[in-house]
Amino acid sequence: MSRWRAVVGLVAVVVIGAGVALAALRPWQTASEPEPLALDGDLATHDPALVVGDEGEPWFVYSTGAPGKSRGAPLVHRSDDGGTTWEAAGTAWSTDEDPQWVRDSIDGVEHFWAPELVEHDGTWYLYYSASTFGSNTSAIGLATGSTLDPEDPDYGWTHQGAVWRSQAGDPYNAIDPGVITDADGTPWLFYGSFWEGIHVLPLDWPSGMPAEDADTVQVASRPGVTHNPIEAPYVVERDGWYYLFVSWGKCCSGVSSTYSIHVGRSRDVTGPFVDADGVDMADGGGTLVLGSRDSLIGPGGQSLSEGYLGYHFYDGDNAGAHRLAIQRLGWDDGWPVATTAVP
Image 1: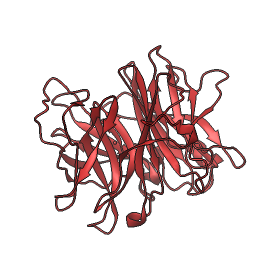
Image 2: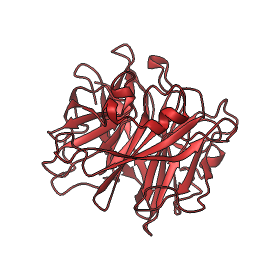
Image 3: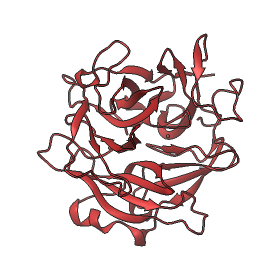
Image 4: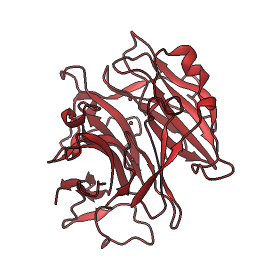
């Protein structure tokens, strides 16, 4: 399948205690800034890919598309006031630009899930998932472009085709892309949902496609848990550690959703990733970062940008509608810290 609040809704906060440092602060940010951002506007997003803009520049969120809208192309939201007020900015591409390779190879795709945005050498890479619910006849696709801003005259995405596929009988599900470039400049694609969990494989720049003879390796799973509910991988590097964030549980079920965000870390981009108790994520490990609390239900589908954690949740005060949430991530003794509170 894997970047806050309604005005009358919920607040997601980072508790800054003794010894907790804020990560990746920009020069114009200070630790005394209010936590978190109180969001307003159009917040209807699912599986957000958050990109924090430079000072004075817009922020963007690309998210899971809506069936019937541009044939399900990823949705685009924009903020011009530092991530506080959000407005719908259309879809990543129009109906006429729909990727035909998906229609030719996967039946029943109504919308594209869980996009990922990566910039390399002046080009944006938009990865997205093509599948149907409960199936692993799936693919991760790629489109490239020069800007995220639909108002830019140069805006537009060029479809590059399928990056990685799965089909019935495969032990993995090729959805929920998350891409990181390691210290040596090699990009890696993390992906997966249910089946045998989260996998990783090497890519190449500038194609953004799998490296020659690329093989896929499992890095996280929940053995013994029915259907192995783990998905939405996202990896960031900090102080020589690679942190693998994942969502546990069930999404997409309104107030019945059970998503929560968990993490492990490794010195190597391909793992093993272990949690704060030393348990390998391939053996079910994963330290809780953010779970449900009061009306903030099922947080997950996470991404990170410039020290901010973006995710969706299901609003218990609004009939379980999916909503965007963003908060600055704290760090304590090498581990990410995010807690929730409701006023």
